[in-house]
Amino acid sequence: MISRIEISEQLQEEPLTCRSLIAAIKDSVNLLSQCYSDALVEIRYHTDSAVVQANDLLDEMIWNLLQNAVRHNPRPVKRIWVTLETVRDGYQVSISDNGPGITPEMKSILFDTSQRRVGIGIHQSCQILETYDGFLEVSDRIPGSPSQGSLFRFWIPSADISASSET
Image 1 (cartoon, one colour):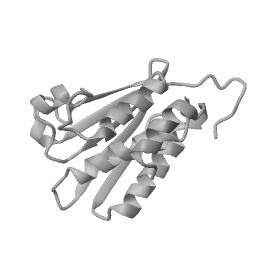
Image 2: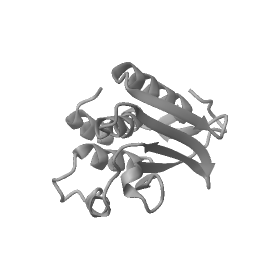
Image 3: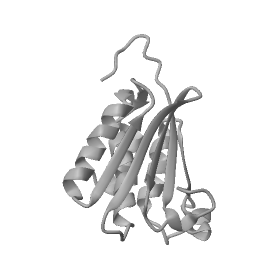
C-alpha cells in the first residue's frame, strides 16, 4: 500500500479518470481477505455499474476504511458489511462492522484535523473524497447503539461516461 506522505503528494498530482467503483471495492476486499484471515466480508451491490472520476487513491481510501474495521475490532471473527447503491447523482458505499463502535464523543472529533487523538487515515480519506467532490460520514451500525459497531458511509458522484467506458 502507499505511504501516508505519498498519498498527500498524489492528492495534488494524480489526474482523475473514469474508474469502476465496483472493481475498487472488489480489489480492496480481496486484499483484506488475504491480509486478515479473521475478517468475514459480505458485499451487496445494488447497481450493475458504478463509474466515478477518481485516481488510484480510491483503492487506498476504501482499503483504509476496511482495514480500520478489522484493526479496531477485538472480536475473534471480524464481520464487515459493504453495500453499494445509487443515491442521487452518484454512489453511496456503506462499510459497517461488528466491532466495539465509536463513542459519540469520538465521533464529534473524528473528522477534526486539529485533533491528534485519531489517526490520519480518516483525515486522508476525507481529503481523497473531497478531491472527488464526495464526502464521508460515520454513524452507529445499529442506530442509537454505538457499542454494536460502526457504519462509515461515503458518497461519490457518478462520472459522465458518455464518451468513455468503465475500466
